[in-house]
Image (cartoon, rainbow, N blue to C red; front, side, top):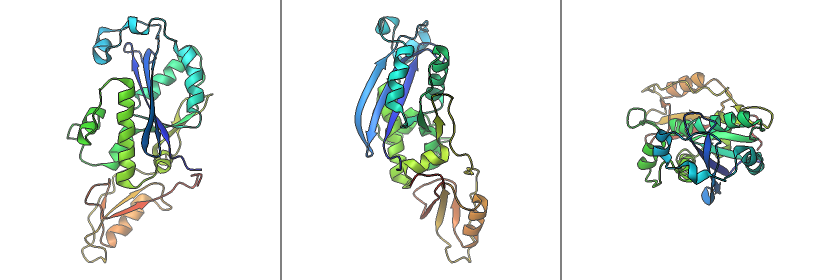
Length: 261
């Protein structure tokens, strides 16, 4: 069965050590809509730096008596088992992996999807216009949130992914198949599928081609090499683009052979 729902996740840390998690935000999206939200305060058993306190506002007294990651890992591990987990940038995924190592805990058995990588493939033009940071993307799409609040950041990342799914018509399962990571309880996150070629293939179309004037984007796992598909489309007259925009008139979505549907 294809994955259609996901949990967006964000963590905050007490200091520059990625394993010093002091807050976890979990936001459940069901059917493309926000379903419920949870914030877990965590005792990192570590020092708080003034720089990190200035970012997220969490102080040692706020987490005094709260559970440590040794207690939290089994709970969220059960909640996230075989679930799609959306996060913005590798930071959150890495922080949880390092905290698992610190406490000798099992990894989280889930599928990871980085909303930064989704955004880079869904929308062009942000590379030199504020970047693909959470704050800039949220502002661009009218998403109001309190930055560096774990649940709020998770919600914003989730809304960015639902917007990308709507704009590109690419399913959550296809995004996971193409650029997701998988982690099991016995190991760290590893790429699910890196056979998809995300190199640049943009090129103009043959003005004598029957499809001249059309703009095409290829995404997903194709049955032929992406550069070959781009050359064929260009010869037929299509302008080949590397990412989805309002100018795109044809969207070709490949499907991984391993997709469970």
